[in-house]
Amino acid sequence: MDDLEKPIQKITIYYDKECPFCSKYANFLKLKENFKITLKDARENLDEIALVCENLDINDGFIVVYKNDCFQGAKALEFLNSAVDKTTILGKLHFFFAYENIFSKVLYKILFILRKVILFILRKDSQI
Image 1 (cartoon, one colour):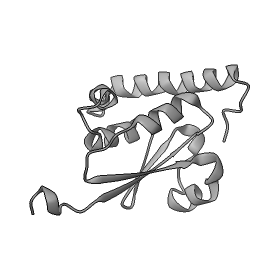
Image 2 (cartoon, helix red, strand yellow; image 1 turned 120 degrees about the vertical axis):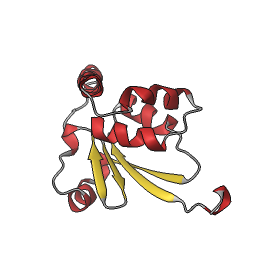
Image 3 (cartoon, helix red, strand yellow; image 1 turned 45 degrees about the vertical axis):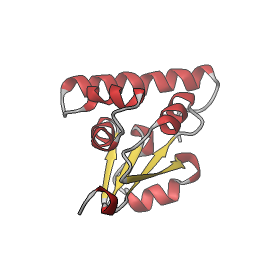
Image 4 (cartoon, one colour; image 1 turned 180 degrees about the vertical axis):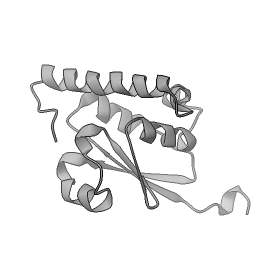
C-alpha cells in the first residue's frame, strides 16, 4: 500500500474542557495524516468513559482510546508521540514522552498538578 491508500486510524481523547491547559493542548494537537482525532469533554461523557475504559478514572488524567486500548496520563502522551505530526511545535515537544521513563512520568505529574492549580485559581472543580 502506498501513502494514499493508508486507512485512517481513529483516536479519541477524553479531556477536561474546562481546564485552559487541557483545552489548548487538545485543540492544538495535530496528528499525522493517517489519524483522525475525536476530542470529547470528559465532563459530558462520563458514562461513555466508564463503558470504554472501565478500569480508568478520568480524575487521574486525560484518556486516549485507540482501537481497543485505553491509555492515560504519561502513557497517553507516550502513545500520542507516535501519532503526532512532528512538524508542529507541539509535536516537537512530544519527544519528552518518546519512551517510558521516569522523566516522562515526572513531567506528566508536574503538568497534572499544574492543571489542578490553574483550575483552583479559576475557581473550577478539578474533580470531574
